[in-house]
Length: 357
Image (tube, rainbow, N blue to C red; front, top):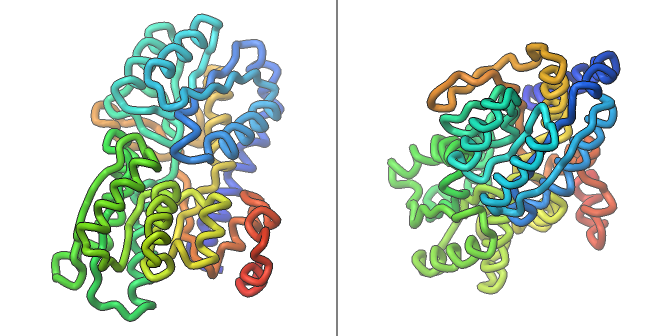
């Protein structure tokens, strides 16, 4: 078992142990109000509705705690309206995935003034007043993306390479951390001249349509001579792949991703994406739920053993371990139950069997 796999297993085990304490506190928690959850959108990644919502719902149901989960659908005004409604209805804890730090900070400050605790879920609110932060080590996510691209180029025998960065939204701190990670891996080769960074552009709002348009411009700038696309998630990576397909370049260019979606894993198997990153969202959801239950009971959560500075405060944090995914270990995501084999392998049985799935 590799160190990475051991770390991944430890994350799942920790989450499972955390949930065992839910039953003992559920009756008390249920009597102390409900938990409000605000998801960011359904367009940048399907994970929010297909994974986070059901995992959070199941975790709170197991704890006997009422939860109200709503999606802001990319609208900052709607985000704040949802929060106001939850506070008015008596929410005692708010879990939120911010659309940007400024709008989320306004919600957190209002909640704090009313004695309501807040938990940043997946994305840190810079200079906010959050009580806790639950996410993955997002710089490590970027490092895995960068190493995946580097390994792909090495496997193709490309000592010289022309690459572009297709970064996430400039107002998302996670996107900043992802880039910090992959740039730390690739920058030495860029500095030495082995790699040429043809373009480095962020995609506002993680908008996949805009991402495709931006990548078309990047490909044109590269004179259609490109070896790698360092894309910050699978939505952007697959948008780039669509452009590459139009130009009959798919499979010839290394393309990174993140989120381990069904479409992303299928693209890994076909070779259209070279690598992605799996984040055990079930463990993330369980971690956030455990913190919320502790807060409902007026307790300090023992699971928040990390600390992340948000620019103003040191925020107690739960930081989980991401896993790099290539063709060689797509089966890890399926074995963990995050995606179904039937969905990933539909119409691709030969490829799945060839890769041990």
